[in-house]
Length: 193
Ligand code: F6R
Ligand code: ZN
Image (tube, rainbow, N blue to C red):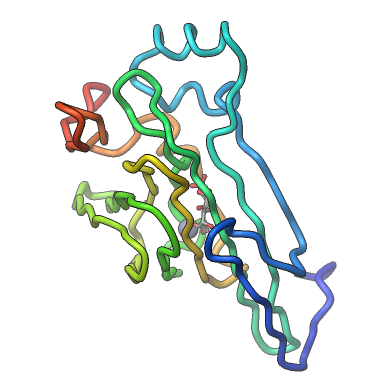
């Protein structure tokens, strides 16, 4: 927090609902398959795809709304359409470092599935379409999955100090995978759990 400059006056930004672009943003990142390979259950499919290239799976733009009294981050994530084997492209998934910190997701474009799971194994899923607001309560890991044929774009609002803990999800994943069966998304048990 020390290095982040506070802006105590009101700010606005405008999100393009088709592309997910907005400005100004403070940070932009891209995640390719090579960085996310361990997340997918079908490692043979991962290797086949990487032999052909290294596709972009998702990216994110962040804007910080930090004042001398408060600290929101606003992030727009875009998940590309596609699959690794039968498993749809998805975010890494994480708990917040400060477990008591909640978050709001708001779907802007596309069709998705949000997976939520507590450390005790209480699992929920929510279908996402434009206009869906999802409350991620304290203590629930969360991952978004693009189950459609176009970009899935959603925004997220949380406190900056919430942070991210990726370790547990990288090792075990969620109790369910989102896979394509007969052309449709379906949740199946995660064989790694
Ligand atoms: C922030 C948040 C989102 C995600 C983003 C990418 O707490 O939940 O902004 O960080 O959608 O997902 P991950 O970080 O799980 O790869
Ligand atoms: Zn989060």
